[in-house]
Length: 124
Image 1 (tube, one colour):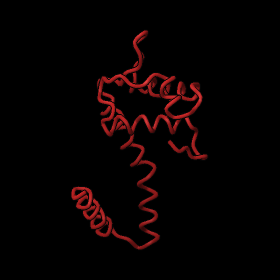
Image 2 (image 1 turned 45 degrees about the vertical axis):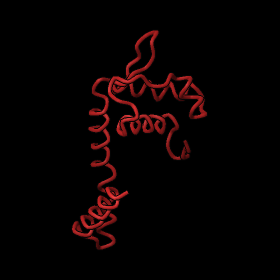
Image 3 (image 1 turned 90 degrees about the vertical axis):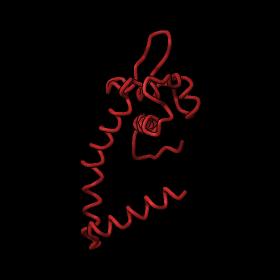
Image 4 (image 1 turned 30 degrees about the vertical axis):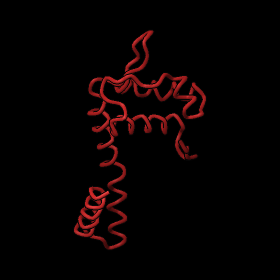
């Protein structure tokens, strides 16, 4: 995993974990790597991974079953989906609309590109 300098590493790890849940690499209720295993996998300090796991526990996306390990919540995917949708609508979409306005692009232009993207995604 390549980390960027502009965002705290533990937040990037949390986003990686969200992606694992959304991409269904980790299903609802699935056991996930231990803090130590995740730290070794990502080549980071275990304390950094602990911060990410704590964040996801506070958001009730992962659960620690004492003596057994960490698991995704039974409704983890739905919670992550809602969280990411909200962040997109509040943070990314306004930036997109601003860029569209500056460049003179319309919603029809966006729709054509989206349809092209979907077609290419299905074909590949």
